[in-house]
Image 1 (cartoon, rainbow, N blue to C red):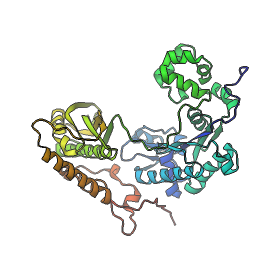
Image 2 (image 1 turned 60 degrees about the horizontal axis):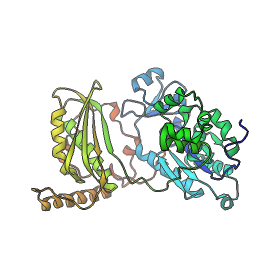
Image 3 (image 1 turned 120 degrees about the vertical axis):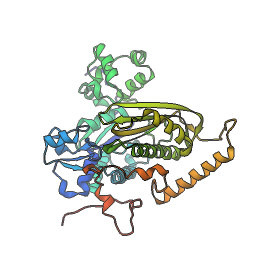
Image 4 (image 1 turned 180 degrees about the vertical axis):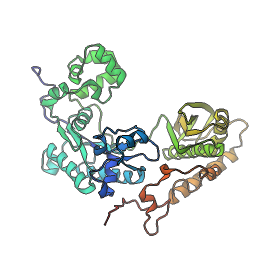
Length: 435
């Protein structure tokens, strides 16, 4: 250890990062108790592993592995379709528990977040470390899942701490321990260091996060710019990335991608899948009050080769029907009749705030406004009765494809409570017990 630590204060800021352990698989084991202790994976509908339980990971099964290969490794593997509705309910409850301890909670993703505990010791009458441990214990006792927690002075250090011991790990990194901890941290474990950055730093003889943090600040900024300087400060214990409590409201792009459970060469079905992606992307875009100037389309064949096109619109639009003719034109250029496809994708780019509309010279403003009013009415119906309750006509072809085992629905969607429908269900998770 050097003569002087990076900081002499234990917790000038106290930030925790919590990360769900094999979150999707853990939720499945929580709502299906008979699966506890068994190798469980989700992603049956995709044909590849979306999440693997720690029992499955111990057998060499990891995310992204094909189901065929996973079952070869473990014939007794429990393969489940992803139940994103239930995962989101567990996620909401996890963040609600965090907000019992502090209002400063950032929902970083569905299964991980940050919380700023600074100054709350007098409120909870305990230390920051005990506060973080209580939160971790509450998650396990109330949701029957585990999270790994890191506590430190900055978001970057807290995230390193939560990854240090998994599953159900707890790692506290007070100021005086930062340097020793960073000596144990390889460069590729640092949040913000991608493969190219690690390769660059390695060329300068750096091996650990500590090697980077002990370099002069000017050196870090000259090599990597503003981000390099900020990461240098975060690793040394200076909190430069605040915990952001606001929901994300701006996007550079929005994409929707759907893989078919069975590859198809039916043009009507492939077009229906593409249109459904467009509808979903526009629903999300309108939710954040945005409109689009550039639209891209991609079709992926059964052999995983893919082709794509993009087009820049003559004006920014927020109504799905306004972009369908352009999407159809790109589709006709890309589709090869008789070829089997497995995936369609749409990307909305050049997004901007939705505001006053500028019309084209020969455009009929009244017709544009009617389409906008109709779009608003459809959104209102779908908000009340379920997403895609009302949709464009090509959705009628969505059922025209061969059904396979990958079409199995999560049990929550088939085991409905009284009064529930396929589109409308109570926002509560349901436990499935073998009695």
